[in-house]
Amino acid sequence: MRNPYINILFSTVLLVYGEKDCCRNIGKSKAALLGAINTLQRTNRLLGETGSPISSIEVAFHARLKPYITLGSRQTVIFDQLITNIGQAYNKHTGHFTAPYDGIYFFACTFLRPYNATVLHLQMVKNISEISRGHAASGGGSQTGAMNAIVYLHKEDIVKVRHFPGFGPEIIHGDWSFFTGYRI
Ligand SMILES: *[C@@H]1O[C@H](CO)[C@@H](O)[C@H](O)[C@H]1NC(C)=O
Ligand SMILES: *[C@@H]1O[C@H](CO)[C@@H](O)[C@H](O)[C@H]1NC(C)=O
Image 1: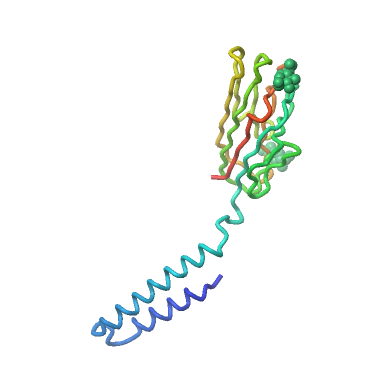
Image 2 (image 1 turned 45 degrees about the vertical axis):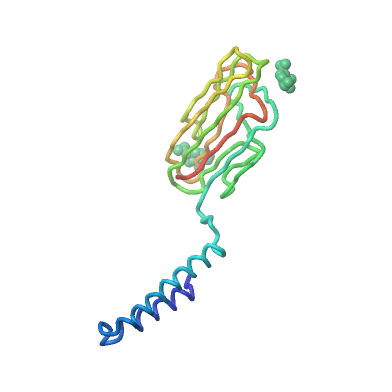
């Protein structure tokens, strides 16, 4: 996109350096350069005010689990309250993050086991392959667990958090459990 201030800047520079005796014309050059700097500063301010700070290819989400859920084996944890969803790649109804572009992505999940449940095991998967696992210990009231991963995703690959395969019913604490991800 052409910016009118950039055009003015180029015209100013051409005016100064296009002259044959520019070297002798130091005062004029200095004034033109100061003008150019001023133009750049104005352009910078203008872009700061009107240009969107979010590029159309940026992807970032952050979601909270609201209810307490009793999870069965392999059940997807659906973090249902969106806090951030730039790029709309996370679906709060399915719990799936679907990569909109090939690239390197970071994911994190922090979770809490309620005081009145025994233990909690979770797994983060890329499609069906494990990319992280986490555990909130038993005893001592509520306990936290965490998972992190950096993975290369192809467009359409899915990343989600689920209950660990083969484990019986376990409870995840509402309000205190989050799922986060972004393209790096
Ligand atoms: C555990 O505590 C939570 C919050 O007080 C409550 O909603 C849930 O029903 C309790 N679950 C059990 C199995 O007691
Ligand atoms: C992952 O699942 C998506 C959606 O089903 C599919 O398009 C993609 O090819 C799968 N990726 C791999 C590596 O199996």
